[in-house]
Length: 390
Ligand code: GLA
Image 1 (cartoon, helix red, strand yellow):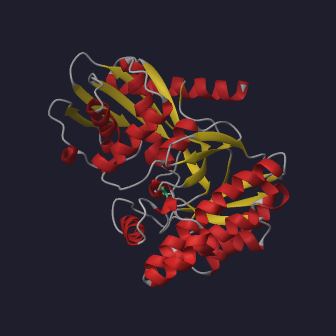
Image 2 (cartoon, helix red, strand yellow):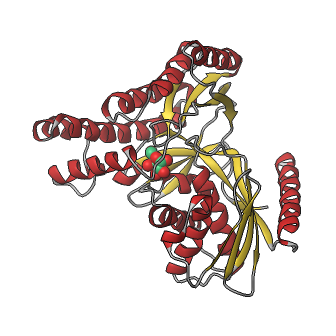
């Protein structure tokens, strides 16, 4: 705890300095929100199903100061990211471009929720890799949402702030994503995953017990870039809607394993496999949470593997690099591994006994090298606490 607090203080000091260097004044506060990995439960969130993500020890931090006018000025420490300025009174979502769409979108959605946001100056820094499927966008949205909520005294709850972030992503950034990433970033607690029911949005922390079981969670960032604003993600979402309609249910969440034989008779083969992924994945999330409680993380490896197979074969959102990462980690000590996040690139996770972590990492690097693929980033993540003011 001491460590985390002193790291937090150092980070807040550094960001306060960067803010002052850029804007020539002091920020009113510094807020931080983490990225996430999803342990299990993929593409279930927008089907009103179950997810089990956890916030990680990689975060986005924003220093913010309110202004007396309605001007917003955004700047960042990212190389090549130009500062952006706009007026809240004239802003419309079609003006939002690049990284500024996230903070602009949050301000816009807070206003649409009836909260008057003053103009503000904002400086951002982050160690969540962008485009790696670790929710750098949700981290930015949540840090800004919490900061603006505090500054305006809006006093929104964490679930409401997560929803503001999701709406910014859907309506301003233009990515048709669900509520999982922002929920993990807002609701995460140390050493726990967030068990979230995306129908009623009830949630509870589920202790992971990784360290006690001698496990580490390795992230393998394949460097294959994914873009949720277009393409495959939206197509999968549309398939799920089609499947639910054809089967006469409001959402795929309403189906269980016993409904699958009937669904197979009615649906085309592709839509059926999309539906089967969602139905079986919901079952795996519930079972994973249960096993974590009764037997700990050493018991969940097969569920992670089965989840990956389902995404590879039924939902078809994996790619050769993700499969290589998963298979190689599994063959070199991992007790379970799967791609994580929206798919079509991004990262895989592997639960690996501490003593095998180096071997697994080297084997993955060697496997990519042998196929002439760019080297992935392989690093350990810890389940960390959610968004906070530093
Ligand atoms: C992305 C989206 C989430 C979720 C996952 C897939 O991360 O932002 O809402 O749908 O993909 O599980």
